[in-house]
Structure formats: C-alpha cells, structure tokens
Amino acid sequence: MITCRHLVLGAAIALLPVAAAAQEGEYITVASTTSTEQSGLFGHILPLFEEETGIEVRVVAQGTGQALETGRRGDADVVFVHARELEEAFVEEGYGVERFDVMYNDFVIVGPGDDPAGIADAESAAEAMAAIAAAEAPFASRGDDSGTHVAELNLWEAAGVVPEGSWYRETGSGMGPTLNTASQMNAYALTDRGTWLSFQNRGELEFLFEGDEVLFNPYGVILVNPEMHDHVKAEAGQAFIDWLISDAGQEAIASYKVEGEQLFFPNANGAS
Image: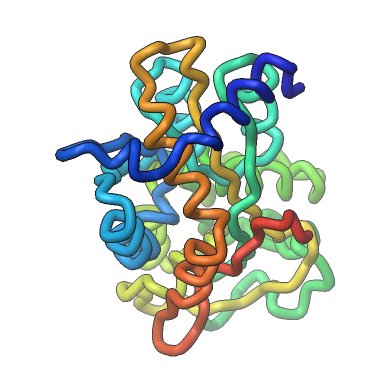
C-alpha cells in the first residue's frame, strides 16, 4: 500500500531537476537481477543514462529475493527486479517508495534437443513441467529465491509436483551459471528469454517451450525509502527511475538486441 507519506515524498523527489543530482563523481547502487546483468542489457543502457545525467550506476547483480534484502538493509538506492508480489510487499512494508513498471520479456523452457520428456508438444507450461517430473528427466533449478526461481516453483505447484530426487538439481546461483549446469547435465531449465538469447554455451540444449501466458515476466523498479535509510541517494535514484520510464529510457531498452532479436520490451505503461 502506498501511503500519503510515500506519495508526498515521491512528488517532492520528482520535482528535483536531474542536473541537481549529477554532482561530480556521484553514483548510485542498483540491486538488480542476474538476468538484467548477464543478458547484457545494463551494458547497453547504463552508458546512455550516465552520459545524459553524469550519474554513475553501480550494479549489484543478485536473485530478486537477495536484491530486495539488499534494499531492506539500505545497501542499495534502487532495486530493479522481477517478482511483482515480492516487489509490492517490499513497498507495502515501507522499504520502497513506489513500484514502476519498466519492461517485460517472458520465461521459456529449454532442454535436450532429443526432448526425452516430450515437452515440445505440451499444451501448457504446467503440463510441460509435469512431463519432466514424470520422466525424471534432469532439471537444473536456480534454487536461489530469484524471480525465475519463484516462477519455477509456481509452475511446479500448478503441475501438482513437489520436485525432489536425483533428477532435480538446485544450483543456488544465477541464470548464466544455472544454464551452464544445464548444458553440462543435458538438463531442462526454466530461463528468461533475454538470458537464453545471449547465452553462448548451449551445448545440446535447445529452445523447447514458450507462449503460455503464465510465463509473462514483468520487471519493476523501486526507490529504496530514504525515510527508512537516510543515506539513500533519493534524488539520483529517482533520476534513474525517471529516465528508465521516460521515452529515452524505453527506447534504449527496446533497441537492445542480440543477433537481431529484441530481448526486453518497454512496459512503462504497465501493459500485460
């Protein structure tokens, strides 16, 4: 729930000019997901923001759950993550000022080219996951409380499966390392499309399942509440948020492509 206090604070910050934040050597810390970092998106958009504002962005790439904990501790100025329920709770608990939609992509299921569980013909993501479990085909899970891991657990629940046994491997690491593990094991994995498109060490893995609406993957950005942590760089942090949801920021996100494919789609208006 966004309180009147948060609205007043947000309005006051929004009125400050970007130039006021761009003092010499100024930087902000953004706790974000491994998918935004490992997909190469930040390498594309952050230089554009820094050139326009003079504000350096230092990224701490973690799973969404860890990134939100970093924000709760006040060890970041902004969180930029992708698990809407966790983000809304972060704001409701007073740790964040307001959540803004920024962009989206989707989750996909990749796996061995010979598809031993037959998921390519599944009619839903839950059916695909149930087929993997029934076949006890190797599956590599992030197991790290990230947005991707939360989405995966929701799919297992929808499939009526409690994943356990030697076929199920939790890596406790980011998306890139988990895909590396899947490649080594010739295993199935749930991944965001952006990281998959930029991933080079595919081995025998192939893109097998997409398109279910439950695989929609929105990203949000939140200023850490300076009333909780008075050292938060609220002006510069809000300047970054304002740029992300501006025409310039949305165009920068849309222009990032790998081998001609767009990895993320601008979503500042909250489309679903």
